[in-house]
Image 1: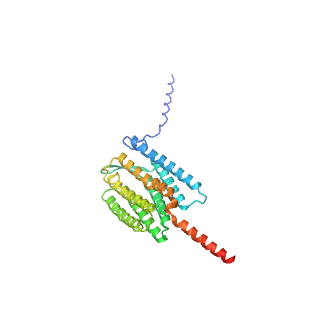
Image 2: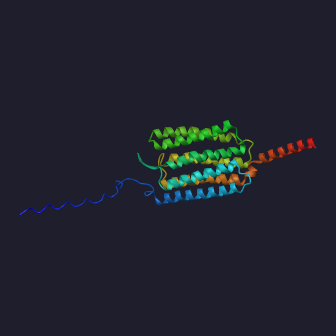
Length: 267
């Protein structure tokens, strides 16, 4: 008799989606809950602050450059915190100690801090050369910190040394401009001076540097500093805008006086 045909092989099971190898760290799933909460608070806080600043700008009959700069700075920071909360651009490095690097933090700083410094310069009507020096030192400092965060020791400390040099130049520029300024300008300058020093300190003790500070404590420290340097600065400046920039009133008065004199000559 003819042999029975062989049974057809069973269909192979459908391939399941590739799971990450065991031990891999994936963000935001592997964030500690406290870090997730801090990043979400930062995103919501900055977004609310940006909304308040936009309302202040829209309520003006003539919008000012300072209002626009402060709004943009807080909006950029809100986007940066939301990106970190969703895990975009967050790197996990296994060097001598495990490190978590938030690239959106540095990108938001590179955009937001020059905007805030430009708003501060609006009070003093800084010369273009002084403004370029101020913004240039700030951008170079942040770039050095970002590159150092991506490097390993001892190279990362060389980048931190470069960042410290640009930080000193930035602080010197800010301090030199305090003479003869009003109290609001001085307070805003002191806020930026203190916050930039905290940023450098947080880099050293945080995961980018020695990792002697826990991730939760580092994120909380940076969050509080960002709220002061961006949102606190913007609200304090704009709620005291008329007192911070009295020269505009004087200039308008001089223009009105000149117009009156010219009109009297033609009467």
